[in-house]
Length: 596
Image 1 (cartoon, helix red, strand yellow):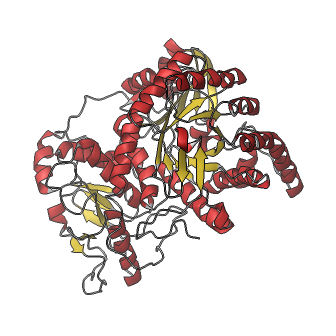
Image 2: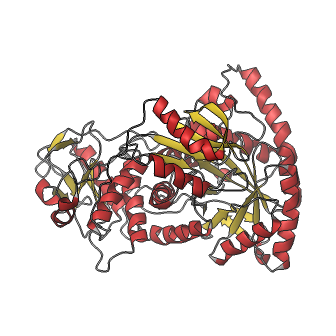
Image 3: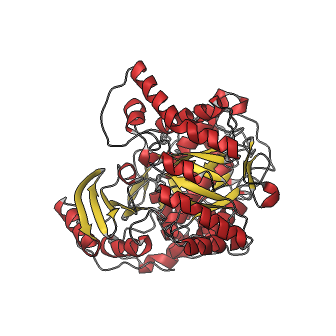
């Protein structure tokens, strides 16, 4: 199966056009030859019409082209009429998307008033109670018939009213039916979405897009690749556009890195027609990241130097780290089963080393000049004379006219053909920019380039040079490795962006939880505003803090709720107690500083 036209040369995946509203009167077209559409979501209560109107206007002012509003009940969905009317009255024509979970009746109300409706196949007609049940073919067919009965009325209304739909599968909310047949897998996510797509097609409705979201960028990349490949297999008229996003990415640098790895990697392979960067921050900040990311993708893809087409020497649908021998790296070892290491230049080492305490988790693990790394041009055939020893570090030579992702893929493919497993040192850029990059741009470039390759299983150490600050570059390297799932040096947070379903202030609570737990290296904590994706997204988290009712919090261990209806002003303390009860708590040590 092929998931893109070429992993070497940028070609955007061809898709049909999906119209959201009337393009002649403020609507947008997703897919085709149109630019990637930027979208975001409101964080206020859907019943607060004035707040919804103001937040929408704020988003449009910074370039948002689609605005999503949650509609958790029929009452909320009915109020979309008021919100849209007020927006149109002040001349705002941006298309509105209703976000639906659990309530088909709410979808049928919302479709009357908005240009697009998002449904989640995991909870539109199915339930998620983590029930274990075996289905024979007849039983499964009967369940599909039930799903069709529930979904068909919305499809018919969307067709009649010329609306668009988004079939949005989430890793955290696959139904029990899908989980029992396919497991919690990318294949399960894809099959769940295709079931709903087949219903749309049965009724000759094609104005829809897909999404495959996960809080884990590596899982998200695998899902979209598999979906694109499956759509290609289904036939040329299955060329539906794709909405990209890493759900519950979190806030700050971590949220931006996770989003850049997931969204950016796919965009560089030509996949994606509309994007949403989900941050636990004010929504307009998401659009700024979208803008920067889309601008940078044109600089990070191979469009000028054509590379002859060839298969990737690894399975792009199932992550497996490239095999290499273990090698010494001063005080640590690298390659083999070792974690991906962080390398710095001698100049960076001289800057940061005097300020790093002995027990610091963030520290250089090797110096570039000491590696005696073999720098290669991967466009040229490799020879055994060049790569005569498998413990020799190799990297891509600076200055070659290739994008880093393409260059390092070529290097790995060339070593594979030669039968060599040399450890590879990844670089975030193939030469330094004469003008220092803005920190937010350096972050995005490094996250896309390194994260994409790490998600491919390529790389035994990384070197960041695009970030001019030595200390910040060192920290960025570790944060990229954590976001890519390569190592864990600090607490990992899965935090959803706020929306109208959220039962507490996510930004305030996330900051409060971080203040108490940020020192818990290797512990993963999920902070979820409501139950929509909670249990599923927390399946690989150690602990979860979830809004259960207004001012009430439920606490989870893994995907199991263990404490219910805790008053919000006590909940952080109770979370800490829960972490202590499970032996994951350590007392914080004095802060370790790294030079900026």
